[in-house]
Image 1 (cartoon, rainbow, N blue to C red):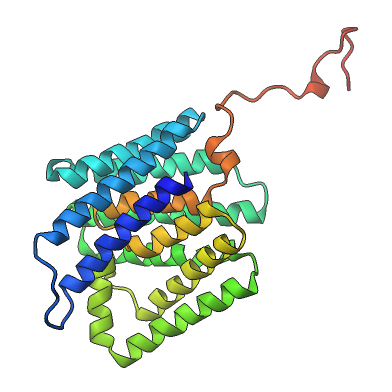
Image 2 (spheres, rainbow, N blue to C red):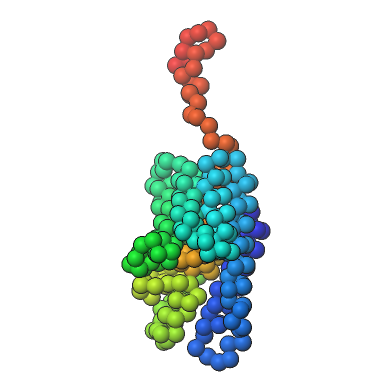
Length: 287
């Protein structure tokens, strides 16, 4: 799964770079106008295919159906505007159902923390897509930006105290703060056109850079390809305000916040009675 996620991350990264370069306030940008929608479409389809591949690899029916809904409707809305409203419902709902089932009922604070981070991305996709599809008003678009940036910020917990990862995250934080202070309008424009950030203070973008970079570096250092690729995807995709970006965010969230047991575990089955409570061979309860 790491390799297909990496391909999706490359496609998303290229699309983001092309958008930023095309809208850069310097000449010549050297990016033809037709390149922006083309690379965005390729990135959206790549993310959807990758998410569907993850879905088809799991033996858990609820997780499979949820991720398939997100991946398939994300692709449909990327190639056809007619599916935009349907995707605004299917992508976040499918992702939320899949994440909730994969994570299960939190048994400890660590589990609860991971659930909050994963579901924050589903909520961000729901708010952002509903706003851009015209289902709700513009304040929800800003709320989606805040939810997404908060989710990426909270990814710092996946660094698990790794000092190198935390230092790298701190460097990213300082870089964003420095760029915002030196050229606030240019930075704001890049965040808007490249990452669809609206209605959010630059300091929240800086904390998101901290969390995402820290998680990515921790994934590399721990040789956890899922965490590294997932964090990079979340950093590159930006706010899930389009179906393609939302699909990429759901893929990144799945890789960065879910573990293999939750995602690819045995098929969901009704709870079996504990063996200690079942009658023994003599017909007397083993208890």
